[in-house]
Length: 419
Ligand SMILES: Cc1cc2nc3c(=O)[nH]c(=O)nc-3n(C[C@H](O)[C@H](O)[C@H](O)COP(=O)(O)OP(=O)(O)OC[C@H]3O[C@@H](n4cnc5c(N)ncnc54)[C@H](O)[C@@H]3O)c2cc1C
Image (cartoon, rainbow, N blue to C red; front, side, top):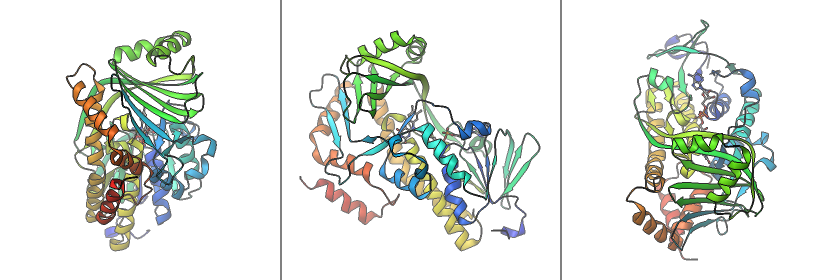
């Protein structure tokens, strides 16, 4: 890829802005195509090599685990740092029957694996270190971006200029690159915050994840070790801020009470982290010589735990489009290839994004008139074995990212079969 489109001299083939998990994974996916990658990140090198714990425990589906293996990232994650998720429970106050989704019967020992975001970032960083054609510009501030039919240009505040064949925005849900490219996005603020913290508890969690609605709050539990879980509370901003400031003893007491002492005595381990709940869906995923991946394209509500799973799907879809573009046009960013990426990622992400937003609205606010509706929905879902099997099958399906229509029908028929 040295003799470029229209003979334009590029200093790099692909410029990626944002070395978060999506940007790093994309570098791992594109480098084997023989492309030179420039990764621009505002955090310093040290923060990339040793990222701080941020409270996020990422529930990875089998498709994501497969891709992390293929990209050489999973090789840097110790098995002990990937605890299994065997069962998921959805509990609603006053609803006798809870929804349970089990790995048993799926042919897998787990629905997915829980891996901390810090571990994913560290592993992805280590994988990138082995790629000679990836140049990292850390601690960098982007001054301006410009793209036209000949090249994409990234100007850094220190005067450096990257001229590339393709520019990728991987700079999170409030992406400045997306804005600079003039791509609009639908942004929704749920008026809630998520407070996350690891906690030890007396009663074992049995590898079961909880999602518990009611009493004006949402509580979730993610099992990390038999007596260690990540606790996730969805609260108003003021409540989340108040709880964030409590001392460890008072905080643990309040979490015990909120979990109705079902886990016995609890103790806080490490730091607490608070995230405002805002979702983003970009109106376009591509522009001239540019594409969006990860949260910059689709910033999900975490309630269905699919943000990074979709981010990895965007990486795989873009890498396929770029490979095809190189093969057919000797150019990483032919408009037809980018359009195909946009089509595939929209088709693969919009239904899940809309379904998640509906769940988040229905279950997120106890003051809404939606309580009878969501109780009925949960009762019905809990009673429908095919629905539970479909949920489990969706998690353990390890790809391809976009199954053919015939495979979708075959899978659907399989879920509907009794037993
Ligand atoms: C509480 C919580 C729980 C979650 N749980 C799950 C889960 O269970 N399963 C799941 O799949 N997903 C989950 N997610 C979502 C997941 O964390 C995100 O989808 C994922 O981190 C997005 O990765 P990214 O690389 O796109 O963005 P980010 O992780 O935000 O990384 C963006 C990078 O770009 C850099 N950057 C930003 N702006 C610029 C700029 N202007 N110039 C240069 N660099 C820039 C940032 O410093 C950062 O390094 C959860 C999220 C939260 C908040």
